[in-house]
Amino acid sequence: MLRYVAMLCCYNRKEKTLACLASLSAQQLPTDVSLDIFLLDDGSSDGTSAAVKEQFPQVKCYQGQGDMYWNGAMACLWQHALPQSYDAYIWLNDDVQLQPDALTRLHYWQSSISGKLGALVGSMHEPDSTAISYGGRRSRYAWHPLGFGKLLSPDEYPIECDFINGNLCFVTKEAVDAVGILDKTYTHALGDFDYGLRLKQAGFRLYVAPGFYGQCASNTKLNSVFDASLPMSTRLALLNNPARFVPVGEWMHFVRRHGGLVWPLLWGKALMRKLAPRLWLWLRGRKPADLDADSGANTK
Image (cartoon, rainbow, N blue to C red; front, top):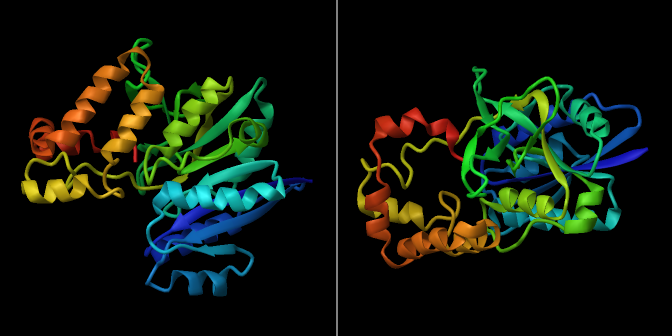
């Protein structure tokens, strides 16, 4: 019997969390697979924990104080899961609604891939649309490893990728044994991209699984730090909110680790953001119409 664990975190979006857990609990698993579910509630005040315990008593629940965000919460859950030596670790966002056979298909495709598999991503589509919202990407340039390409459209067979979104991701035990878990340097975003790149550096391969595995609405750049229609004070506040934008120190760590030959340029641009955030925002400002045109292409 193979033992898998699904790990997800939540904060004050009870209905979405319950809907996600319902779709997870209803999965049609292979007969040789068992699934445990770990949830970290990072200090919700909307009754999420009580509702989960009532409706899904099989879920192992942990509590945070509201300062863990996605990467911190997932790293914490992973630490709790490691002593149980699961055969695979599944990342899942609590705003995902899975298709009934999502985990069965991920199980099938990961077992069909030859070579050193690190992670297999299940792509998401927008609610009420076939447009892709999350999944895997490739780097656009060999000389610029952090040139994030567009999301890859799922194909008939697994597609190799360079970057993985954590909305639904199957991580093998072999990968975890070799690389460990998420890097606690990151607060919220970038932890998934960093982990995938570390897997690649260790010789593992990343893939996008065929087809779609559920729905999850993408973040929009409207009302974000890039939206020049917002007051500068609002954009500065968003810039310093880890849930809305990657903290500058974390981005500098990321580009130094993964930026290849161009890391000094990327690091220097980040230094400008650190020393002159108003100038950086002014240079990066865009009109709402332009933001709306590419809102599906942001990473987290």
